[in-house]
Length: 118
Image (tube, rainbow, N blue to C red; front, side, top):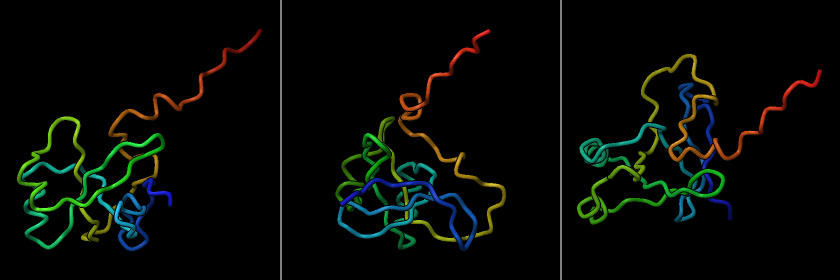
């Protein structure tokens, strides 16, 4: 089963989100914004699940965060925490090109420009 997430435009609110299969095997739609520990706690209190993104060769996989993970592992520089997507307002002018590159993966996959031969 492929658990890599990919960027899509939410059909309901037009926001750029991540969609994929969580590590537990459930289809998930995640917001693109990284959360601080304070923001994560607010999301959990509001009833949303949060996920830790783990880099893969193509994108990332998402592992659900439990209360113990939140309590003992405060997000650091390399930790990417995302929340379930909740349509809240209509987003305008977002495209798939606006997808965040949390680990600079695109620099390894960009084709090398060729010089014009004259």
